[in-house]
Length: 535
Image 1 (spheres, rainbow, N blue to C red):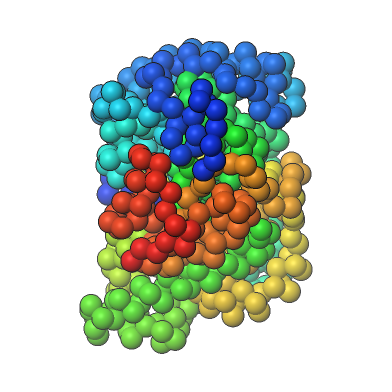
Image 2: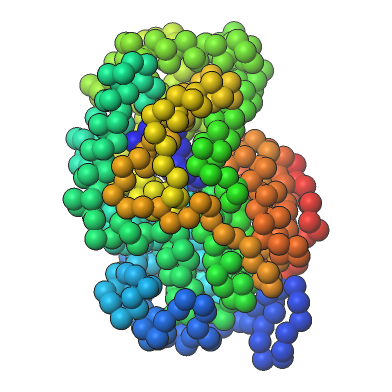
């Protein structure tokens, strides 16, 4: 279970844990100007049945949502921080298997806060925060301040996708076993170490099958996209307005492919490249995190001089970090928790510190502790944040859902021999992250459920314009993925916007230009020129 990051990064979780156009008929709204809807009561009527939807799903589209005050979340992300009084929660019933529409249903957890200006209300704006595996029920209240301007005219709505959080939860290892798995050697150097990694992966897969085997075949992205269209109907929206980050861009692209005529105003930020197989995506992430590490070290040297633990940065800094990891592979560092900082946890912690410039100071402190003081407390804290572990030692199901969704989506499986053949390429891409990322490819080997597709299908001819946002310094979803996504969506559909900056999640950086561009699109329907750049 060794991946440096989630399939597309767990947007904002590190920060969170450390701080806690075509014309249409007159009676049909255009995508650039969604028709205002009455405040969502949960009794919206379906406005048509999209491909693959069923009679049973149509019946489910008339269900009533019982919105009520939210309880405090119990997952590791934000545990104990109840949303404010204006946050409402509900449960949506969806088919477990859309291929058997009259069969079993599962419950999806939803959260919303109503639009502040009811007279100017556009409708619902649905959020997905990535992972896959990030809880929207936890994430939306945590980051809602970033979307205050959008909340004037939209109900902000998010959800735990199937398999995630409180929605048909995928459960695998217990907390003690998760501690052992996240700390275990993810860069095997000997046959015995390779076998140990294989055994760790096999144990994780077996636990998932034992605890959640009934839902594992049905947590795929296509099913989640169908859930979103059912959600749209129940919320009473003619078109889907959507803001997806990281893996949420893949989910949004798949939705646009399945339901192009239902796309309203859609923003895809920090974009997963839909054309890359898992090996290509992992290599791209190794390169992306190495680029972000270089930018971090350059800034550290400029600000701290000789006090910077990575020196002048560049090759010198990379060598220092690589030497630290090599040392940890043999001799883990102690922490105040009594746990040890292993090489795997250190790589995860360094990656976690690169998701946002807001966590760069913590990364400076963590590397200083490890390199100069011989302790691993801050890097361990960064790793725990990315792994979904709270200070009490409880894990959310981020890793379990991430593995389950990724493995049922992608049909590719990689052997130890495949990885060993690719190691030189990965190490060339990143002396720090390459080996760890390459061995992460074995995470789906032996998974109890076969993968469904070679890559996600996102072509969406006839859909309204979709904003596709990429950030030049994004470590988890390199900017090239946004350009590819825009092309794959189709001419006149994908509208590329580039932020010249650092971090994963461009809109959430607060960049004024990007915020103005996205807000004008979502609030007023103003589509920017393709190729717009903000800095």
